[in-house]
Length: 246
Image 1 (cartoon, rainbow, N blue to C red):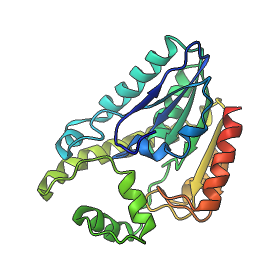
Image 2 (tube, helix red, strand yellow):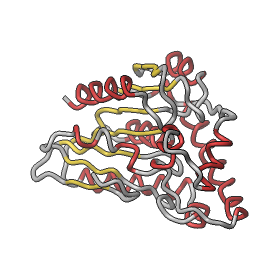
Image 3 (cartoon, helix red, strand yellow):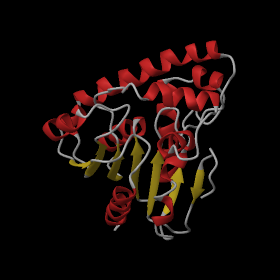
């Protein structure tokens, strides 16, 4: 998979299973670059781009929750035309769409969820990291900020006022979070969640909520963040992903 902010699709002839990867808000299929090579050749894989993402600041502002949901539904419908089952891999906001699809489509058989944002909790260190990304002043040894940059799919604008258009989109996200939390206990599809203790955007309280209000298996990554996975924990994730696919 090339390191570009574009979708990736590999449809295997006669494949019974398709793996759909859904990124988070302002995200990109790059987030799954370590996992996609682990998917067997006999499976199809589609790392999609939701509406308004991997484009300009204005494109993201002009998108909406409805458009994001329609993007995911279109991908599901397309894959089900030629596949019997779908496994969904989601990150952040993408996990919310994964849960929604699993609850209404019985052919969605398994969920592999990274950083489910059931409770949002922005940490102050996000501010200097965002400024570094905006000004493009990131040191070579700042691994966490560099990783965020790689997983941030929007084309920057020098007009800072254009970013005000993002406010309604984050309100859309918060709406989706509230809707998802209300129906967590109704999810029957096998699901495993990997939550990062050092997450800059998702509150650690999400771990307790997921364990209390859902039937999913919840694993905690003690040294990882929202976008960055500490090497030993990344190795753990890869082993878990291989098991998920088997």
